Length: 606
Image (cartoon, rainbow, N blue to C red; front, side, top):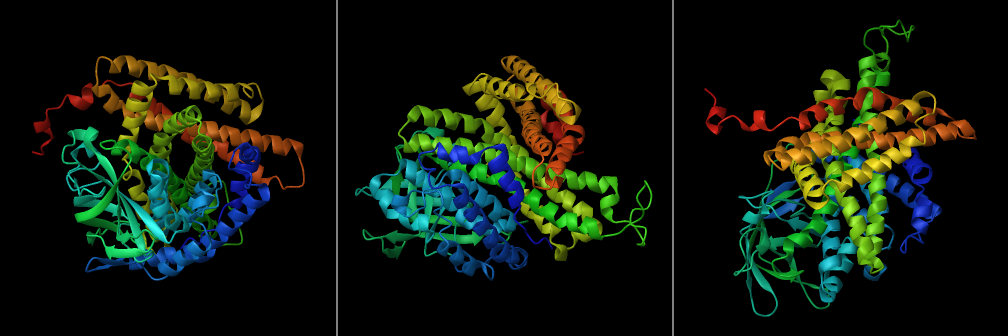
C-alpha cells in the first residue's frame, strides 16, 4: 500500500522559485514571522507528522471504520492518539490570531499543511479540517463574547467544529431548510430539527464540538432570505470556559459510506438545543459562505491529495512489476520481462497523475496567496482590499473545487489501472484512494453546482464576463514574453495565447445566447468549467516550465533532473491533456435543444 512521502522538493520549488513566497510573506502584516527558516521548519515538521503518525493509520482506519453505539461515536484505533499529538504540536492554530492562542501565521501555510495531512490520511484530516470554517465564521461574524468563549479552545484543537447545513429534504437548495429556532427571551434560542451528512458531527477526539447551524426564526421570510446562523455547542459552556450540561443535540446514526470510512458522517437531531445567533437575523446564508468558501478550497486540496497519493503508490509498482517486452525492444534484458514503466500507455497514466498533482498544487498555491491578501484586508481594516481579493478568489474557487476534484478522481482510478487486477484488491491500498476520492466531486457543492456558480453567478451575473477577460489577459501577458522562444516554451506559450482568445470569444457567445435561452447556462456550465480548468492548468504548467528552463540555463549546484522532469511533464500536459479542452469547447457552445427537447415521460424505460 502507498506509504506517503511529503513532496517537499516540489513544495519548495513552488514557494521559492515560482511564486516567491518569501517576498509575499514579507509584504503581509501577519507575515513577519514566516521567514524562510520558519517556513522550512513548519513544512518539515508537518511532513514528519504526516509520514510517521497519519500515514500508518490511513489503511487500518479504512478497514476498521467508525463505531456507533447509543449516540456515541468511537474513531478507529490510533486516531485519538494521533489527534492528541496534533493538538500538542499546535497545528490547529497555525494561521489563527495569537490573541486566541494561535500562531498568527498566513493562511497559505495552513493550506500547505492541509494538503500534506490530507494526502497522508484524508479521513483523519476531516476532523480538524471542519473546525477551520467554524473558526473563520466566528472570527468574522461573532461578537466579542462569542469569540472569547469559543475561539481559544477551537484554536488549540481541544474543541472541534462543524457546519450543519443539509437536511433530509434539502442539500444544495438551502431555501428548503426547516430547522426552527425559537427565541427563549434571554438572547438564546431553542433549535429543533434534523441535519444530515454532518462530517465530524460526533466523535471521541475532543471534549466538545461546536456546531454552526442554519435555522429559521418563527417570523422568517420564506426561501434563502429567511435563514439565520447559530452557534450550538455539544456541551454548554460556562462563563469561565468550563463545560456544563449536555445540550440536546444527539447523533442519531452515522452513514455507511463508500469511502473516507474513518471519518464519522453523522445524522444530528436537535431537540430544543440551545443556540446563539451569529451575524444578523435572516442573513445567515451570507455568513455561511465564509464557511463554504473555506470548505471548497479544502476540497480542491483533496483532488491534489488523491492524485499525489495514487501516483506515489503507482510509480513504485510500475518500476518493479514486470510484464511483456517494450514495443521498442528489450529494456531489462537480464530479466524475464520489462518493467511496466517502459510501456508507453503506463507512462501516459503516470504522467497524467503527475501533471494533475503538481499542476493542481501550483493552482492552489497561487490561490493561497490571494487568500493571504484577503485575510490581510480584514486584519488591516481595509474593506476595499478584502473585497478585491475575495472577488478574485471567488473566481478561482469553483474551478479549483470542480476541476481538480474531477481530475483527482480520474488520477485515483488511473492508479488502480496501473496495478491491473491487484489494484482492485484491498491489501494494496489503491482502491481505497479511489473510494476516498469519490466524495470530493459531491460534497461542498457537486461539480454541476460549482459550474453553475462559475458561469451563472461569477461570469454572467456578477461580472458580465469581466473575470474571464482579466484572467485571460493575465495569461496572455505572461505567455507573450515567451511566445517567440525556441523549443517547447515557445510552442506552449503560443498555444496558451490561442486558448485565452478562444476562451474570451466562447464566453461572449454563451453570454449572448443565455440572454435568449436561460437553459444555456445550465446545459453549458459543466463543459465551461472543465474547459476553464484545462486552460488554467496549462497556464500554471507554463509558469513552472519557464522557471525550470531558466534554472537549467543558469546551471548551478543542483542536479538538473528535477527541472528536466518539470519541462517534460509540461510538454506532456500540453500535448496529451490540454487537447481535451477542444471537446469541452465544442460542447459548451452547443445549444440546449438536445438536452431539453425530450419530454420527461420519455425518460421512463420501456
